[in-house]
Amino acid sequence: MRMTMYTDFSLRVLMYVGAKEKSELSTIQEISTAYGISKNHLMKVTYELGKHGYIETIRGRGGGIRLAFPPASINIGEVVRKTEDDFYLVECFNCAANRCVITPVCKLRRVLHEALVAYLAVLDTYTLQDLLSNKDELGAILFTK
Image 1 (cartoon, rainbow, N blue to C red):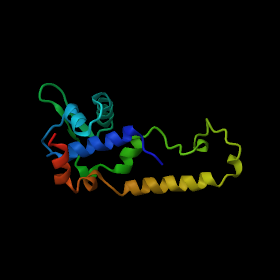
Image 2: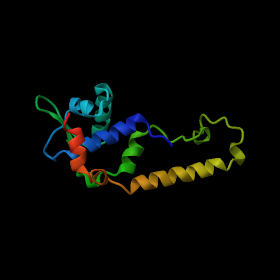
Image 3: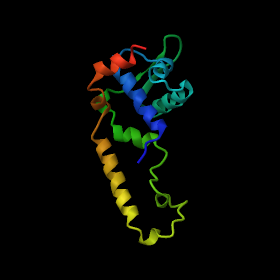
Image 4: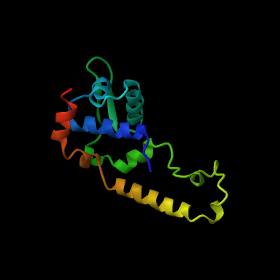
């Protein structure tokens, strides 16, 4: 299974803003610099994270972004579900595009579905707070650039 870059960037943005003090704002430019990620990509990511309610955006001079909720209330599995386009591990997961001739008798589909459910179940056991348990070390790397 492979996560899209979009979801990866979404999780990294949440980790970045979560590693800061609650009252501190972050800018897309500083996140872009810290991770070496395109500012344009991050603008799309932060827009969607705002739409999903994970971050607050403050416009204007001195504006920026911050978490909308405490890190302990942001579930990683939920974030992944909201930021991934689909979970079509193989062709037959997409009924509209499936052309696989063995679908009616294939056992692989069931096995891969079970693996996907397990993958998401593991992600559901973690929150952003869990990813920030080494907040000081994260800050030392991210905030020194």
